[in-house]
Length: 442
Ligand SMILES: Cc1ncc(COP(=O)(O)O)c(C=O)c1O
Image (tube, rainbow, N blue to C red; front, side, top):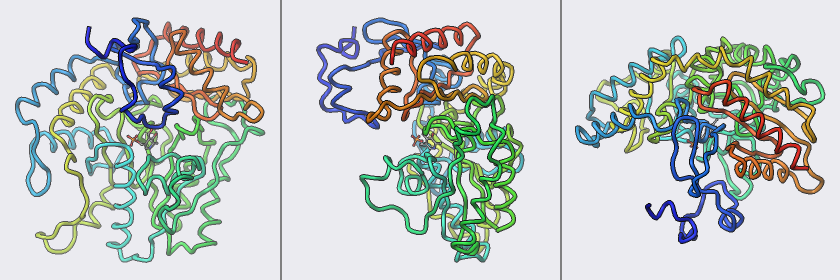
């Protein structure tokens, strides 16, 4: 037994945990020792089903031997080499393989190490594109209320969750936000995409009227907003957003950090909704969560607009020491092979009916005010307790963990996004544990 498996002898003080109530957690820790397939094993030896795919990232399930072998081989072949003015073949191989599964036309790939970096990279590429395309006044970035785009200053600024910004006072100037699309009055308990709200995309017109189209570089949205509690776009909304961005010469960025790599039953949300953005930010599922990595997919239009000037000139003064890290590329290639062999990028399509039925079966349980499910993702929203917003969902999450289920709580919603290898029997177990917990947590 290693020290990692003996929580009671472990000092938890040094690790300042991210997005965690540290003092509460350390008083009553939830520690995971190992994982395989659909399950974690806790330090005290309990098996818990992972209905979150880690943090929306372990799409092929835990403990994939093929990825471990590829990583180990790569470490002993080429552990590290930079990608600044020098290269290594596996980066080009991986980019080509990604381009082959990317939505049509988005076949230029810029590597990062996380979703936050992918978002900031996409925002910077959008600004550089507008400048290069002769529109240097287009410097404004538009996000959406309730959006989550990671924690860099760019992503935080276009993000629309106030708690993620409140403590940090400053953010990028010239940022504005579209209204969110959550509309319980009209859309509660919709199956899949809600019927009402396509017109909310017209908020682009409001911001154009307010700021002038000539000041706006890009609009960024999550096609399905995840971290804010799974908000599914109303029917026609994304199509309208695309049309309005085209009308006003604004680039459209999809943040597919969650929706990329099969979450909706299609390789990308752009495929699922039939709407092609100019840039896609991705991460998470790109390596099955095994090694940190992200990628930005750019259209030829955007990419080629920057490939100008003398050939000796660096076209984009941007990149990370670990962009296209060879070990991450090896993990990513092995991940793509699993996705392809097991058809995981589209597997969710066949299961979504069962998933939705299962989630909607919870609709009449205490305090449930909405059920939202699409592809293999779902959010169950509960009414907030008086003077204690978020407490109910948090308690539900803890109760579920103690009874064998990991899910995410955010605000008063619990969110689920199981590994794409999930079977019907797992879905039954998830709903069984969650249903019992909903009855217990008043
Ligand atoms: C839509 C979206 N964008 C960006 C991010 C940030 O990714 P990371 O935590 O890898 O920086 C996340 C993380 O959950 C996300 O859901």
